[in-house]
Image 1: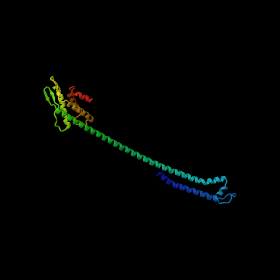
Image 2: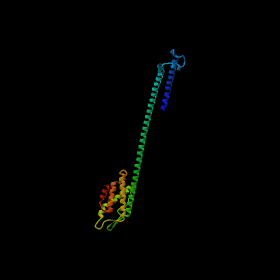
Image 3: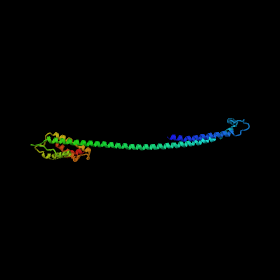
Image 4: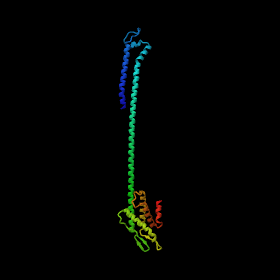
Length: 268
């Protein structure tokens, strides 16, 4: 577009220069034809005949006088054309800079949009992971609840001549509260087992595999609770409480260590 405008501006200048050139040459021819010639020059009206009888010095002066104005006209024309070309180039550079600035701003907006979309995708991914972890945590709670109920129903404790069922199912509607009550039963029972052991023999369990399953489920639940953190944990099933319950189950199963020992190792 700038080139078209520059070409449009050049046209009048060139036409003016051509017109002045023709006028100057016409004026030169007219003056040369009407100028008195030396007596030794033959009579004639032709321009070439008049130029032929001039001496070299006179011929050079004649051409200098004829073409000096023409050269000046085209010098001015060249300056004007160059000025218009430079103006067009400056305009093109200005427009190019404006386009570059617009592209830069558009690039910034694109970068901001991509960053926002990336942050949104990361947020959605983290939210999906958190939901999956919480869902896995709930599944672990249900597994631990089911394993305890199986233990409460099938596992008996034999001490000397007595046989008893140390654990009872809960009627609490909330699943986390049910499991809390069950873990409390395990902790309470682990506290009286040392008193039940006597010289007549320690307590024995029927179906002790239920203890192993419940311990494994509590370990899984504790790991998931610590991974999700306090915000995703189902109160009161906190890592501290689950660790105490796990220590109690481990003690009942092995009778090796006091309940606090296993929880301290888990904390490490």
